[in-house]
Image (cartoon, rainbow, N blue to C red; front, side, top):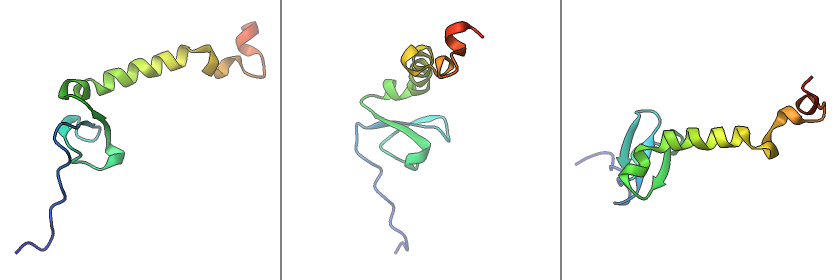
Length: 79
């Protein structure tokens, strides 16, 4: 008899990208802090880091979130 029960593997059809292992997993196998998702398909999960980079770049270039144009005016004057 096993002393510890294995936790459920998660729901079939939910895909995650594990940041710790750099792998795609079906159902949450690793802890939440180490994964991105859920994604609807394995393919979406496989491209999680690429998508995150694209979103981060869009965020950096969005003038509504650009801190360089803050109170000092450095972004406005170029000084």
